[in-house]
Image (cartoon, rainbow, N blue to C red; front, side, top):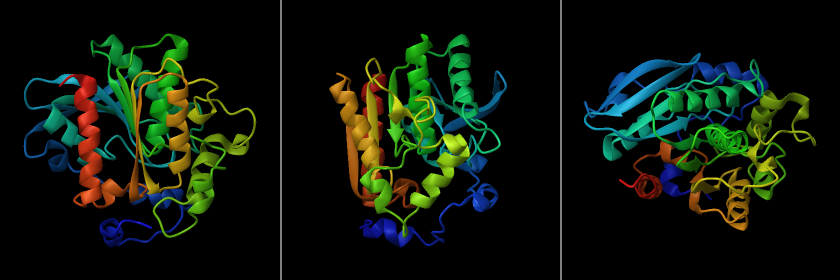
Amino acid sequence: MIDPEIAAAMDFPLTPLTPDRIGWRRANGRVVTDAELTRGGAVTFTEQDADGVPVLVLRPHGVASPPVLHVHGGGMVAGTRRSDLQALSEWVAELGVTLISPEYRLAPEHPHPAPVQDCYRTLTWMARNGFPAPVVAGTSAGGGLAAAMTLMARDQGGPAIRGLLLMCPMLDDRCETPSSHQFLAGTTWVRTSNLTGWTALLGEARGGPDVSPYAAPARATGLDGLPPTYLDVGSVDVFRDEVVEFGSRLWRAGGDAELHVWPGGCHGFDQIAPEAALSRRARATRMAWLRRTLHL
């Protein structure tokens, strides 16, 4: 059951994402304004080019602390470098971090590996331009891409990553966990939507034997050697079980992982109802992890 405060804020159509609705989803995505990004002057931002990838760089008004590379959500098919940033600019204002948000290419026009390549290109651009090792973070599809680029960095001897922050991440193209079958209607991201997103990214390969862990991180045969990782997800989220399993596999590999399953949280609950008690708890817990990880 969805938390009552969250449910009361869900005053919009809960229509599943199907291939014919991808264009509509893109056209009707929430536009984050300059005023929302700057949070009353506490944050400044610039648009930059990271080796061909447009990036938005947010900095605090004052001395910047270590960076966070955040990858936006959107089911692999929607969203921009400004997506999710009304909330995430809070990290810049409150913690003093520098936040970099890449605008990766979207499926189905640009299937795997284009999205993760753009994210990894941003990471290497940061390393070449003097940024210290970042926390890599991501929301939903961006959480999957954040985990994927971290695996790439581990496997390819790429730039150092200080921590991995995964918020309701999209990790497993097979869509066979109990929670993947449990939520068919009545919430923000349901099984039909999930199948649409993964099929846009992978085509006929989705769910088959040859999917790369750089597309679906749950496919990785080993999760050893990853940086300290924070994972959270709502209990009423199609991704719940794959997130819990990913955290368990990190522990089994000897990794440092912190996992939270928020009771009554649906997919994206903290952005739907940011002032709800559950949303405030989730945001505060993430920020506490960031403070510890970045030694702030």
